[in-house]
Image (cartoon, rainbow, N blue to C red; front, top):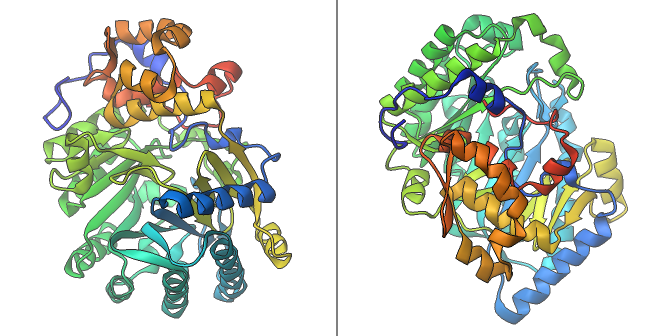
Length: 470
């Protein structure tokens, strides 16, 4: 296979290699991954992390914040969905939720101080467009009063095309949103019926045109392969249709069928799911299709047009990764607002309560709704640096790890280097005297390389909670 960004040659992978790679694995939006969070880290520990950030800001200044706002409400259930959501057509349920969120924001301001700089703001869900225009106005005004949103900040929102219109997109743009993501998943009518998400191509096309006309700086579309009723031929048509829309970015996810964990997925018939070899064909043809249409492969399921900020960051070695995926911005503290939101402050991770009632009860007592999290150990920090270097740059320089973390990487991770050998024999990675280099072919399976350095995963071997690598 040639370097990403050029038309690919066929994957040089044998059936045995594909069987070895067709396994569940984390997406590494963090390390350690969220399944490792513990209840021993709660509201008190989170408050302490915020205070340490505030104290550090007094001494030497603090980096800007990233803020994630979770709106859990959806009008309709998508059977594949694994997100934290509340299905309801009663829009009045948003009112008490916004009141709770106001309290949560005030708690953060009390600990961090007013006018904290914000360089990234993202609304996710659920469906953020479940909120009315007036409610979005209110929430954005509150955030701007509570934090100092920097000029040129990335302000993004996830949009369910079924809940939007060109006029609504104009309102979002007026509020300052400059990045928008449309949930597409698949354009085939049979697949849409099977997952209970019917939205014709023309609906999405009109919204993409409207978003472009209203000046959104980046338009993203989400796709999923491995859904019920999908075939390599039908998904190839979806890939062609998405390429016709010419979004700036494309996220291509592998469907994780985990009905034992996510109740809505029990409505999907296992017999309707494509066989593994067809999933592989879908992935291969989708990669080939997007590259042939001029997209650059960013890494792990993400594509972008060559002049998009992500593609530029990839070329310049400035790619980063956080809980929202690949980013152009350096690592910064993340404040998660809303039910189930995940945050990162200093060397800690935290997650809010997953139910509306638990979330409300904590805030009613004047406490942060954090119910689990993690304080990273020295070993976690070293491994996070290695995994993120693999995921973002496809290369780990031994000297940089040694100097930054006061270790001798070749000695400290000798067992991991042994586990890299089969991947090296498969042509996915090259281990030299000075660095680990992911090959052009290995870049498409970089999760498998990163998993080698995941101590928690290697120790437990419990992987069924994750999506499959291919």
